[in-house]
Length: 283
Image (tube, rainbow, N blue to C red; front, top):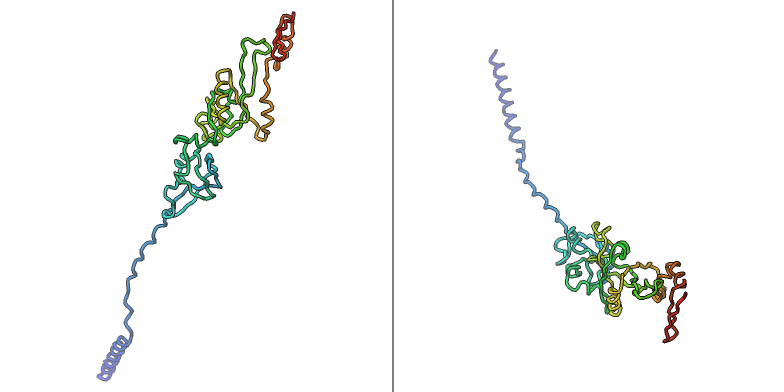
């Protein structure tokens, strides 16, 4: 290689090196790498409270049932003090309770708004002003086969045996109370069965809402004979029941055979004319 060629090669190498250095000086430095800050996790949603509210307008004196309740969800800070939550325990506690004040639809139900059956003064609060509660013993026959429930309107029928009367008039049945309200069956006060255990269970006592005079009448009737409960139709006029209550049904009214025996040979008849009484013998 000649000296001239070597010199040209050195110049080319030097020019290339100078150009690279100049390019590095002119190019802007790369931006600094900034580490991204980790964002905090979003706060968990606020859990709402489920409250028991009135499903419709409920007047004071209502015996509460499951269909009277509804559920409304609110923030914890919006829940009124003493409001009942929508748990099964709260529903069981309020079922059959007596409402003490009027509730608008959607109003929350607080513990001070009702009386439970075991609370003092509950039965007195159920009764209408001036009325009394009196109980009679019943069984599967006298208690309408266990199908009478609180809220039903019933008649009370007394059946007694007159020991010294003629055979055709010895047994008599009379309606002694008409159109009275059943307020409790045993210790059940709600309308209809409160749970499945009550279905098919034969009641032992029925409590009736009566006037003071009717309570005295029923107390005497319990010692005279057997008392039966007759459930009245919902749309029956009260005057119809009062007209039937004024009559008595004797043995001869039920059995034609007894009616015929009352005039058979050897029988007797008592004839009453005003204040005079006369015994007639048929031979």
